[in-house]
Length: 424
Ligand SMILES: [Zn+2]
Figure 1 (cartoon, rainbow, N blue to C red):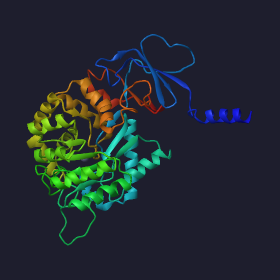
Figure 2 (figure 1 turned 90 degrees about the vertical axis):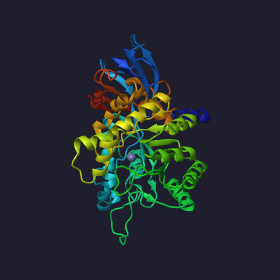
Figure 3 (figure 1 turned 45 degrees about the horizontal axis):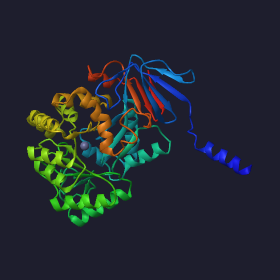
Figure 4 (figure 1 turned 135 degrees about the vertical axis):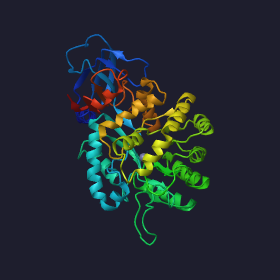
């Protein structure tokens, strides 16, 4: 008798908090996997999971709470594989010196909440501009249920050589300051840096394998870190069970990082044919981050802090798109990253149309920002597609995004793990 009661109580404890059965009716469904949308699909959700997908027809019975989104198109929650929610201004390296870590956490929380509302249900933060780990505090507060926000993964910092994109290169030599990146040189130092990053919650390591566009005083056409340092970073990260993402613009930096064994190349601006072949051979992902360059050129053309970036975009945009087109045709696995650094959050989805401009089909671009990004994260068992067993991260847009990708700027419905975040 007592044992039976205990068993009953034990099974009750495993029931999800909200076990209501929900049926979501969609005008069309893009599930992240199929080549074509499924017309008049019905998604079944129970607790935090999708339990089934039905193509057309009527509901099996009247026990469901119905969310009728027709004629909207449903999609998997978007995944941003590259965003920096702590960065908010064009002169972000000066802003870094001005703002405390606590303040950055508050501001970053507001940003990731905006991202969730805009349809990004998962965000990878590949290092952010803070001495401490403000974005991990944001993640912890969300995981503890203090605030609503997207699923967050990523690295604490971007590892940078002295004088690299994560260093502050515009102050006098006698000034002692702490840079926005983690500045490390030498094989022993990079090993220790990887260990510290993991100790403080990094589930990725981010390394700047070339100079950067946005930072002052370094050159993105140059490779940074020696092959020995890059190998030590990957070896140490692999030992600790975390993948490495390498920021790399320069052709040589890309190849050195790929040879060292990184999981993803970020930006990849000057990737050459050899680099493309290496990426295909080793299954390395490429996250191109196209929108950020256009944003500064179009909306902040007079920015003093982003003068370097704007000049580089003007000079190399066409070449970048051409090289990326080659990579797409060669079959490199392409992810979607907005490189959010303070632009209006909804505009981040313009990345999808730019991938189409570079040579992707619209459906391919949408799958890149959902299923492929989930695979990049190693989270394909949880997110990225709308299938039975996956977490119920679902968004909707008012119309057919395959015909008009700008509809992604007008996300009308967001569900995160079975909970409705936004519904218009
Ligand atoms: Zn970035």
